[in-house]
Length: 115
Image (tube, rainbow, N blue to C red; front, side, top):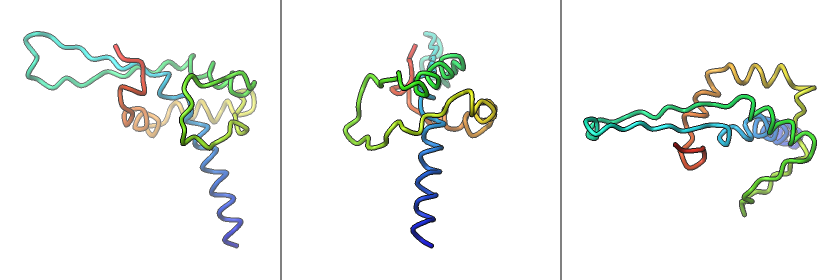
């Protein structure tokens, strides 16, 4: 029925949201510019800190992670936090996929640490 599909869709959405939650704060956006290259477009380098990502996931699973900034449009709860003990293979697989690279590249430098 349509109601069951909506419920499954909501659970899948929350699951994916939790998987990628904390990704951008674990990224470091680096731009290098040289005086002789001012007119050239320099692509930023984005470095992902995997250890920090796992640390955030552990804190969330233990209920000890509090975001520094609460967004007013944030209605999602953190009841679906995933434990590394139970979902380690899923996290390891996610970190090795091209989709995560695309997701990270789609972020802006304001969502990451900037250097």
